[in-house]
Length: 119
Image 1 (cartoon, rainbow, N blue to C red):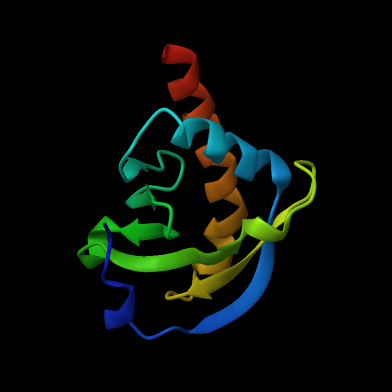
Image 2 (image 1 turned 60 degrees about the vertical axis):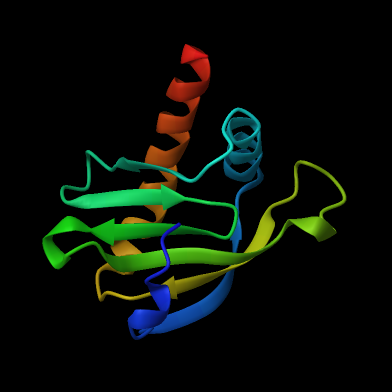
């Protein structure tokens, strides 16, 4: 598990929502794996995404895998329908985090769909 988030200062933190499509795909993928997973974000050079039940973290290999941004505190338990987004907390650890946020979710969807098709 990526446990270095507490070692870095948070530049910004706010509540947000993960689109239902992204969250539901994560749940489908999670049924097929029992551990944390990660992959590089090829369209965002040097960045990788680590996915766990506790948080999703974007790290930067040029900064010794320091966090760039993280989604955490998922509030999926209160959803009453699968088409609803999931409230979460987003933390920015790098000044470029906002630029990578939406693209990361797009790349995450592409990667998880590819992995699910292989199974």
